[in-house]
Image (tube, rainbow, N blue to C red):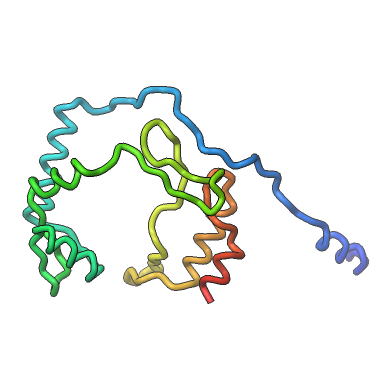
Length: 169
């Protein structure tokens, strides 16, 4: 038996909100688990330096390729492959901070990356890959969907999806 129309409307107009905990950034009170020995980590690092020097990596941004070329990297603009020697990587790593802060419009929502801070953030840009098709640059649709998913999480510090809507138009 079908419900009367007035009951169906009432059910759909009721607010369906999910209660959220207030936003906060977590701190890990425990030391990191050391799965690999220092020698194993060094072996992985040496292997990664060899890959960067011999095989290289694809860098799609012409702007970034120019910066890397100016810093001494070997850049093939046709294939977009950039190769860097170990000394260059070590120099870059020496300048990298142990932690840094991503400042939000609301200072209470600033996010610290590094140290013993636990951070839940969506990673990557609006790249999309359709089933059975090649990877493509992101468009407004996948970016908006990613923003909605990120803003639905109580632990991810992202702008509400309605703000992303305005940006994607």
